[in-house]
Image (cartoon, rainbow, N blue to C red; front, side, top):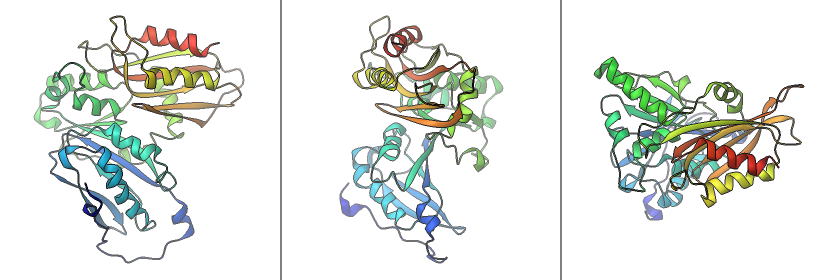
Length: 336
């Protein structure tokens, strides 16, 4: 998409008070909504402005947000940021086949936007009536089912149109979603009616998520794939404190070098990584976040209590994942 194809933001009503110091310094959250939403060619960024709405229209060709978004999508957000204080949230709806990981990484680590916005979370919508068909659709060797990838990356999964299926059919969708993503929260809705407090302010990509993540990780169990090629969730824990540089080596070997293989020789493909670890010299738990090849470490507000057993708990979502092999490599790499 050419530069001139990205229009300037035009507010419906530019009224309101001037920009304050607090509004200039406050970061704006971005939530990515993905799934089979019956979307059209044009998508918009809709923001609240004193109860009104104003929009920035973007043409996302081929249903994909990728390289061209660096030229157009980022510029659209930058245009929005020129009007900070006049809106308080950005919702970005991708088209049906878009990879939310590529979109998320743009907002998560982009240096041009990092001081102005933060990625709050990824929401995936699953159609209860046709979702199972989408989630089990087989793709050629080496390719990942798009619907499964969206669920794998999501922090919140909304199973919609539950009134159109039987309880048995709905349970099959639930089971499939949970087998793919054992960590994300699941909401069931009709006509997409959901309380916004369950969708916004998830803080899924910052240290605040470490508080709720601790409880989730204590009860999370490794899922078993229904299909050998399916995306699954695996989790493991190892006692002790580790060196940060050793942890970086483990993650980079897993996400960047892709040296880890399962027992059949297939390369492990990690789509989402999350966990809480104990780093030597740090008094608080450290949250580990990863999306595709990108990852980040951030100290949380959760302290290690005196006498508490320090534990490293990791959750990996992806294909060809072998829990025992990953755990063995983790211990060999970081526990030295």
